[in-house]
Structure formats: structure tokens, C-alpha cells
Image (cartoon, rainbow over all chains, first blue to last red):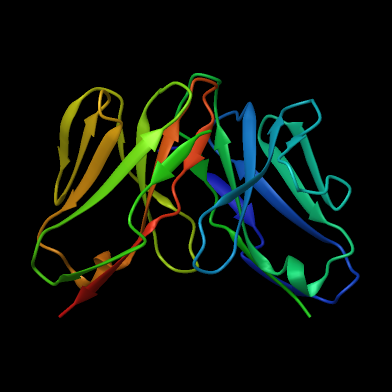
Length: 116
Length: 109
């Protein structure tokens, strides 16, 4: 299957700083990328959907000014957690889809964020 | 609203067979996925069903009945490494993935 690379795998940052997470599709062009967060023992929660070249669509309850998503190219999307707080500590996962009717989404490895 | 139901947790014995059920009510249907997720890792793809029936892939099989809004994942010859969460996800009419909460499968020796 297609490969999606997410970086970094884990990061520890101080409260109040910003953290950027990258998601790259390595062998296909991803027209759509999804960002999820997952708290321990809970299901994936969709944060936002981004299409290349346009603004991301955020799910209800997700602060777009706090979680900045940029999908500048067909192979790269970034999620920046701004002014991070300990409650932002979570597992963040991206997935990418090649086309609208391509039903399978391929997942990155995930990023474990710990804010101290 | 859209809803995916699957059991929260199941326990099975090494070498046995276990069936994890998933029922769904969604706006449209364009396929159903099963993913495996080990703790601290991203989900990995197991199966995709869009037509009714059983799809077998090694020790894992997945079944779909669209008329009943029902699927199951069947795991045979259970191994300790199969201990994980199993996520059911449905693709709706907008090609969005609707996720179940996952079933935590515990394998005992």
C-alpha cells in the first residue's frame, strides 16, 4: 500500500510553545489529508480535513487558531499546535487519501505529544 | 445521526476464534474498513468490504451485510500479538470515514 510518513514520532515541549507535525505522502499525491487526535483508550477523533491549496475544514469544537493546518502541496500537510498546554498532550495521527472516490486512507505513524 | 457500534472489550484464549461485531447507521454507504491498532501506534489496515459476503485473508476474515448494517471481523488461531484494538470504520455518502470507538481484544494464554 501507499506510504504516509509522519514526523516527529514523539515530542516533548514546554507549555506555551508551539509544535509542528509533518505528514507526507511518499509515493502518491494526497488530495485530501485528515488530522486526528486520540486520547488513551479512546477512538480516533477527527480534528480537521484539508484539501491541497485550500483552507482546512475543522470539526466542531476544534479551535482553528490553536491547531493550524497547512496543506501547501499534494504531498505535505502540517499541523501546528500553538501555545501548547498540558491538556493538548495526545496522540496525533494524520491520514492521506489520493482522490475523492479513493475510499482507503493511509495512516502516518502518529506523533505522541507531551506538553510539560 | 451517524453511528457505529462495536463492543468495548472482548477476551479470548490463544489458539481460539473470536468474532468482533460492528453495526452501523450512516448517511449512505461506500464501504467498511477494519483496522488493527496496537497501543501507542497508528491503525493498520486489515480489510475493506463494499459488497455483501465474506472476505478471507489468512487468519482474518471480514463479513458484510449491507441490508442489516452489519459487519464482523473473524480472527482465527489467535496469537498473543493479536491483542490490540480493532476499529470499524464506514465510508459515508460524502466519502468521509465514520469511526467506531474500537474493540479492545485481550488474548489470554
